[in-house]
Length: 131
Image (cartoon, rainbow, N blue to C red; front, side, top):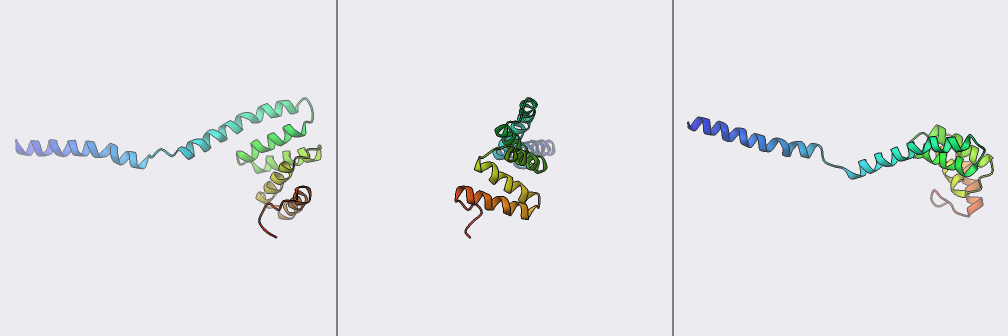
């Protein structure tokens, strides 16, 4: 009878310990969830902006599309759409800065440098640190 009580007590303690150890392994990380939600939000907006661009060349919409690609980590498409936005007359300095950063991220350092210089000439700001 004593042996049965020991076994039962052991099983109860094990049963109580398992959920606690599982919870430590699968901790809720709100930053990961937020990041995933934001990525999905950006991905959902891409078709909307593409549809608008079927009806004409709108530099501000091109920049928004590029932002979506950049925020989802698709730097190749982001580069294409930032370039299109600038070529089509987008004069937003943030667009040029993001284009420079995307070029840098794609390993096109000389082109990125040129865009950073243009950004500095336009805004008077030096984005990446002191000269």
